[in-house]
Length: 486
Image 1 (cartoon, rainbow, N blue to C red):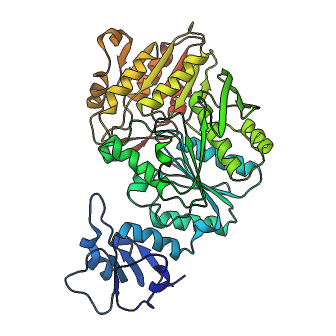
Image 2 (tube, one colour; image 1 turned 120 degrees about the vertical axis):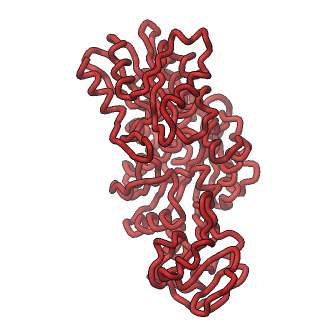
Image 3 (cartoon, rainbow, N blue to C red; image 1 turned 30 degrees about the vertical axis):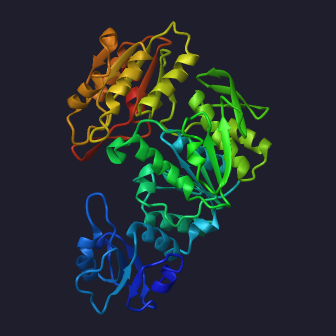
């Protein structure tokens, strides 16, 4: 599916082009190792390496066009050089053109925020799929094209991967695509060149400071997504988050809102909750959802609002919402034969832990015991570790700190960082068991009928990453095994 240099850059302003604009390329790459004959190579400056250092390697591997921010000392006559301001932005627009602008051929909606992205994107996909629309999903858990699973490696893929996937979605007849948009993806221009019909903001809490360094930088990365939405799009924000209105300050898109606490375009109220779901009132209409907790009520409002803005009939939306169930590893309930309630959830930030524990505490009778099993990921933001332990120990009857994905850190070091957030008065509620399997078994051994066990942090993940190796580990599986052994 060859494209000429002229066609690839028709919607992106280059600084200069040295060589013929009529040269045709068959492949596009930003990794020199992926280059082949008749390839265009983008010398992207990454966080670890600079693509400019690999230009010669790319040419050696077959690149006939090189896109760069700085020209090599010597330019070869048999190579076209395209000089641009930012290779990562240019890559986004070029990848879109290379794959015939697939995002313009479907209704693409992006979801950004600290928590709720996966749930909202996944449930919007299910809602529209159940209503009979061909759909695509780009999420942390999985990528889907009309129900067919395509493995996911990042919350948001790179520019080439995204456009290649969306091109397949177009070929499969997809009309709607729902996509998680991470702060990393915005900051690294991975969504450059994509055409969004809508954007949704969920919330902003403590996370990813290992990458963004400050909360302000993290917040501004989220805001950039809305700043770049076109006039034809909608920007749907959560007014219950203090950053909700901030996200819309400079957007050209149509400004819309949702809220559980104040007046908004889409206003919701939780009327009744149980472990099986909750009764809600949305814009005057009643609906029962199988999701649980105020944070999920907020997610349901975002789903309702987005579906409405995309033109779905209100009654169809409410009927669809009543049939939805949560994303894998999000408040996933596992019951034992002896009457213990297990809950597996992806909560891995202080705010997410606070939200799910609040949801459980709103429903429980408090005549039973609530045990939390939680850890924190290694080689990530260390400042949230004591906060997570503090939030957890204050909102449950017993906290078991354990290993999560230690990566290249020692699990005990991570646990000790978490312990620093537990005040002396709460130490009697604390246990530290490094082995996650043993921690889950201990929680079950300490429980009796009607007690509740929350296993937090990994959710849908079916592995534990240790020293660069992913070992099979599934919280749901381990909880079920522990119940069977009880």
